[in-house]
Image (cartoon, rainbow, N blue to C red):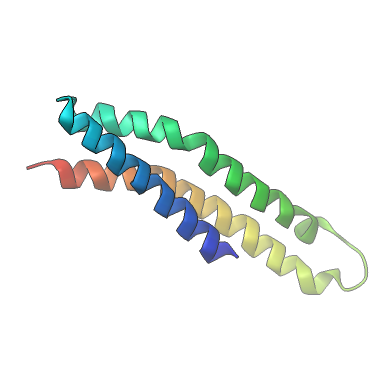
Length: 103
């Protein structure tokens, strides 16, 4: 589930960014402003998807019933992985696009 979510999140952001960058190139707007607009456009859907998956991992992480010691590491892996992927997706993708845009 975690690799699928990260793949979906990281695939949807560049698609929107590419469309917005093409619009920016057509209207002579610089890449940084266009990239900022794309990030603002995609931030809410990416955050909502990640939060839905993250909140589904919290019961696994916090439960203390019978057999919970078997599911607790899965909850920690889900929540930690989602937080890491969220940070990497939201910060590294725009930086890579700006780096590739420079001549």
